[in-house]
Image (tube, rainbow, N blue to C red):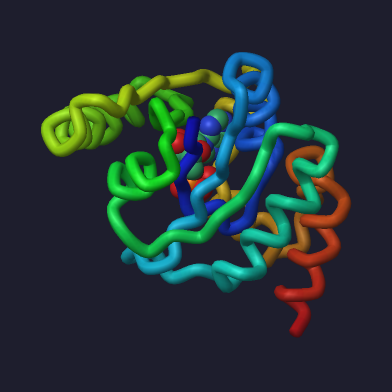
Length: 156
Ligand code: ADP
């Protein structure tokens, strides 16, 4: 199964989903979006490294960067489906459209929505970066390694 996203940076909401999915599927591949419209704080290589360091305890989790269509990567890698996280009902509108377009392009690839534990429902990478920039405490929401890299990036 693949788990695509920007992951700028990975946080505990993503890890919560990866942890659950890694028990349900043989292998989970994080697919880091290289060229999307979002301006990122971390490069794709840095985001990849943050994910590997944060998921090292999950033996069937891998990470790849990709700059094409997610369904094409799913087909190339032999994945059966795509995991997307759902936080609020408001996520559903966009996610539903994307899932339908992906079904049209690749009917054999199934989109699966998963919800994180309640604690992480309000968490997203943008808010996390905003709080960290203003020197707020985000240690509850990211692994220690990500916290260190975030602080060093924001202070550089
Ligand atoms: P974000 O910047 O909002 O974290 P990403 O593009 O990095 O967004 O998200 C990648 C995938 O992870 C998406 O499917 C997204 O819905 C999901 N996701 C993002 N935040 C969370 C969270 N707090 N809990 C569960 N899934 C999440």
